[in-house]
Length: 572
Image 1: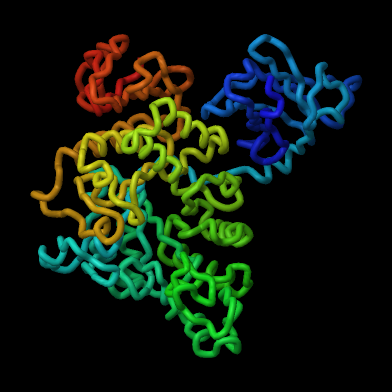
Image 2: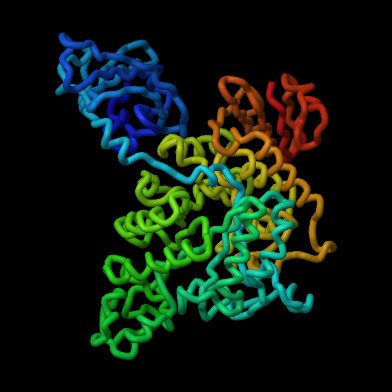
C-alpha cells in the first residue's frame, strides 16, 4: 500500500455536512492501490464503559482520475464531536489503520490516535446553493449582438468585421422580445454580459455601475426583462465586473486629475505616481491593459461601494444571480462579504465565479456556488478536437473534478465549450457539425449547468475575437434548423430525466474503450438513461443494448453507434 498517497484532513472538504446529522466523509488513495476502506467512529466525550457509541460504515469508490481513487461514505450521527479512523485494505488483503495522520498495524483504541471533528461547526459551514439553479441550462447573451428592438439593416447586423467599438444596437428590450425563442429552445437561465455604462460594446470597462448603458436601454427595461423571464419560468444572471473599472470611472478620473492627492488613491493599486497607462501601466490593471485599472477590494470604501451596487440591482430589478468576472484575482474575504450581503437580500441568489483553472476552495459554501467550468472545456477539446484524451482519459478528467469537490457542487458547474472569450466551438472543429453535436451531447448529458453561447444552437461560426461576437443569426436561411432541433431534443431529454443534471455519472467500460464513451444514470438503483458516444470514425458495436429505445430518434436501437455520433438509450 502506497501510504504516502493516502490523504484525509478533518476539514470542511474531507468531512462536511450535507444536512442535519448527515455528513460526507472523503479519502484519497493511489489509483488501484486500495481495495476497500471502512470508516470507524465513536463519540469523543462519552466513555465506552458508559455507552458504546462505536460504529462503522463502508466507503465507496466514487471516482478515479487515473492517479487517485476517491472514496466517500455518508454518515448519520448525532454527537457533539466525533472521533474516527480508517481501516484500509490493499489488493493483497493486508490491512492498515489511519488515524490522526498516522498509520497503525492495529485498530486504534484511544481517541488521541483518531481524527477529531466537531459536528455543529461543520453544520454551520454547510454548502448551500439555490435549488432552482441545480442542473439548469444556461444561455449566454452578448447583449450588443443578440437582438435589437430597433430596425437594423441586414448588412449592418451581419457585418463580418467588427471591433469593440462597433455597435449593432442590441438591447434589453430586444432580448425580452426573444423570450419565446429562448423558451422554445429550452434555455432556463439567461446570462447577460455586462450591461452597465461603458465606452465599448463589450462593456467590461465600466464607467457607471448605477446606470444601464443607454445603448442597451434603461433600468425599467431591465425590470421588464427580468419580469418576462420570470413569467416564462426563466432566470436572469448579470455579469459583475468588480475586478477593474474604466479610466473614466469617477474614482479613477479623480485619481488621474489629483494623482497622490486624490481621495480615491487607495481605491486602486498605484505603484508609482504620476499614474500613467503605458505599455506597462504604473498602476495594477486587468491583463496589464491600462484602460482597465484594478480596484482595491481590500479597501473598506470599495467593498461598501461594490456590495451596494450589487445589492441595488438585486433588490430593485429582481436579478437572480451574478457571474463574477476575473473572480480569482479578487481576495476571498471580499467574496465572503459579497455573498453575505446579497444573501441577506435574496437567500436564493446564484453566485458563479469566472476562473480558468481548477480551484475547489472557492466552493466551500462561503464564497461562490459554482464556477465557469473551463476544466470541462479543456477535457472536451482534448477528446474531440486535439485527440490527446481517450474516452477513459476524458472520464478521468471529469472524475478529478468529481473527486476533489463536494458532490453537491457539481450540479452548479457551468459546463461550457465556448464563450465570448474563445473561438466558437464550431470554428475550432473545422466547421464539422458532427463534432459540435458530440460536444453539445457532452454538455447536455452530463451533470452540471450546460452553458450555450448564443448562436451555437443554429451553427454560428467565428474565430476568437470580434468574429465570435457577431450578430445573432435570425434569418431562417442562415440558421441550421436541424442543429437547433438537435439542441432542443437534447435539452428535452435532460429535463425529462433530472438525474442527468444532478446525479452521479456511472462510467461503463465493457465496450470499445478506444472509441466509445459510455455512461449511465441511476435513481435508487434503477437505471434511468444510458449514453453511448462514439468519438471514432467507424461505427461502434453495442449489441447487448439492441432493442432498447433510442431517445434522440425515438426509434429502436439496433446495436450500432454510427461514427461521430451519440445515442441516448432509455433505462431498463
